[in-house]
Amino acid sequence: MLQVKNTLRSTVQVSFDGRVFKTYHGPDAGQRFANEVKVLRYLEERGCVFVPKLLEADPNLPRIVTTNCGFRVERVDPERTKELFAELEGYGVRHDDPETRNVTYRQSDGRFCVVDFEYAQILGEGGEAGRARA
Image (cartoon, rainbow, N blue to C red; front, side):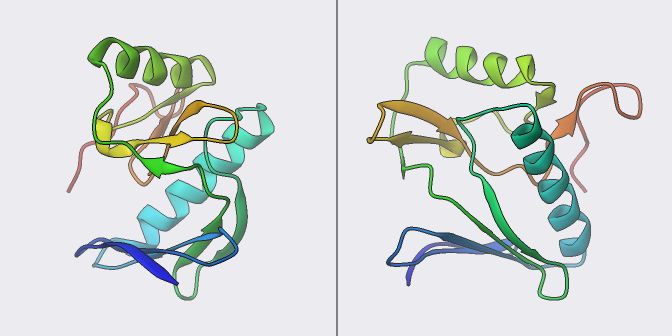
């Protein structure tokens, strides 16, 4: 497996068959895991095709396995980034970190995608959208 991210909050690895393994670390790992699982399931139910599809979720590790949404991009036009995250909100989810580091490019269909939903908020839940980071 190729390690693509290793921080205090998570480790992300891509297998040779393209699956993405994300393992959560830190004191709030279980909460971030549960939130990302919930948001990814919510988006799948709504037919959102520009986010990873959840394949497995193991709360004991805690770790998720998802489909691959392409390669991280170095640059995206700021207006295009804004449009992409606005499109996500059209599916009922506000991403708490709408930055280029959470945008990938899927070459198979020429689509920009959004990843990393640990702190995302399903709109309409618990009042105001958005979540403060601890």
